Amino acid sequence: MRFKMWSRFAFEVTPRKRAALRRKQQKEREALPLLADQISEQQPGEDEVMRKRAVDWERQEKSNRKQRVDKWREARCRMAAHSSNEAAALRQAWNCAPYPADPVYLLDFLHGYSIGRFTLDTLPFDLNPSDPHGVRKHQLEISVPKGPIT
Image 1 (tube, helix red, strand yellow):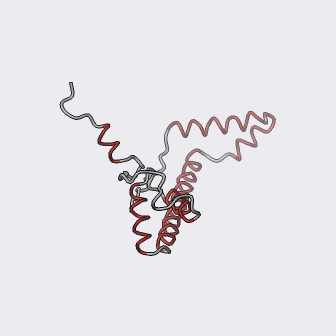
Image 2: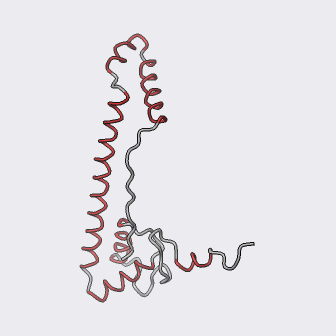
């Protein structure tokens, strides 16, 4: 079954993020000029904010990965609910689908099949294999120039 790996990115503290934080805090102080000193005292330091953002980033990444895993499990359960022949045909159709190899797209594909939007004989696309991004393999072969480059 087509599957697209989920990219992981670490939180990076950059000068642009620090500058944006300084601008934000400056705008907060300028919004209430009479209370600027009190607002300034209550604003956290840059390092503290960046540490909190890094922790929040990691927590959100874990949450997103868990949601994605849950969607894949739900899709596999829906696939397993069909007979073995039907599931094999649906898997073959999914492997040729022009959609990204994402669990939400697979769930939508299975939902469309279950409500009768299409049948295995009347798929809304040709049965040409796709890469994980949904690009058809025959399109990849056509777009690659053959022969020496001049």
